Amino acid sequence: MTAEIETGLMRGRIVRGRGGLYTVRDETGTEWTLRAKKKFRRQGISPLVGDRVLFTPGHISDEHGWVEEIETRDSVFVRPPVANVSMICAVVSCVPETDWLLVDKLLYAADRQKVKAVIAVTKCDVDQEETAAYASRCYRGICPVFPVSGREGTGLDALRDVFAGQAVCFAGQSGAGKSTLLNAMYALQAETGEISEKIARGKNTTRHTELFLTESGAVFDTPGFNLLESEEIMEPEALQLGYPDFAPYRGKCYFDPCCHQSEPGCAVKDAVKRGEIDPDRYGRYLRILDSCRVNWRNRYD
Ligand SMILES: Nc1nc2c(ncn2[C@@H]2O[C@H](COP(=O)(O)OP(=O)(O)OP(=O)(O)O)[C@@H](O)[C@H]2O)c(=O)[nH]1
Ligand SMILES: [Mg+2]
Ligand SMILES: [Zn+2]
Image 1: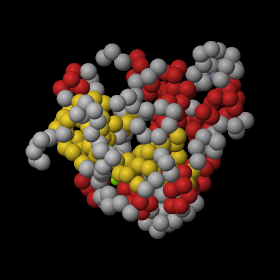
Image 2 (image 1 turned 90 degrees about the horizontal axis):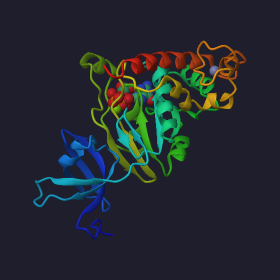
Image 3 (image 1 turned 120 degrees about the horizontal axis):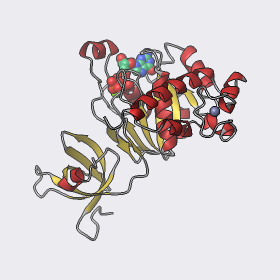
Image 4 (image 1 turned 90 degrees about the vertical axis):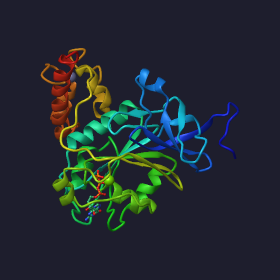
């Protein structure tokens, strides 16, 4: 099959991007180095890893071509910046200690993009109980949890099964073990690094998002999150829409809209009291809600 289409443009997918240069893989597996046409900047659009594009190839082997069109995206994420993923795999582990607030934000973003989410609890060779048990309790009925070890290769078959046919974005804190896990699952060679070195350098091992094709789909390795990342700016009332665990109580609060914070007669708070919604998850919801309120108030600053 040729990658060339009638207009003379070629079709491909962005697999890497750095310093304004994008690597695009065409349908035959050939990689091309491209720049984005200026019109994208004027339109406020940045090409993203995962984008399906139409491009003009460079003429001589060392000259870059041009990204001409970006096809409509099935999904788009700001953090990590990726397009056309069909599943988010939140990677957590015992070291560094998991920031569950970050996991909630990832699940929120996945839900809003109508993308499936799973949690991989890795380094189970070190911590065999605690982190996985917490995740299973807190996210019961919200998303599946898979205990794995990238180092020892345990639990990978179950994860490979759910990833089959999907474009999976690995996301999570720096040092959680994302690159190690995807290397172990698909015999890849993404760079991995020691946590002590990361702290000393204050840098991620994975610096750029990269799309890898696997025998059964695609996986995206992304740079880990460090400390506090800026929040998305959204209306506080809209936050709850990304919480499937709150959905059964929608429309049952005394006030409408209800942010489920201090309003009387709140069905969500009642559900927390009855143990139907995890109290930690609800507590983190309140923290995210507070930052939404601040960001929303200051949105024109
Ligand atoms: N014991 C154990 N250590 C692991 C496991 N997976 C990763 N590690 C270690 O954790 C450290 C970080 O692993 P990486 O795979 O580089 O982490 P990352 O999430 O890709 O980090 P960034 O690229 O900075 O976002 C390395 O020292 C790995 O050897 C595991 O399953 N068990
Ligand atoms: Mg990495
Ligand atoms: Zn309420």
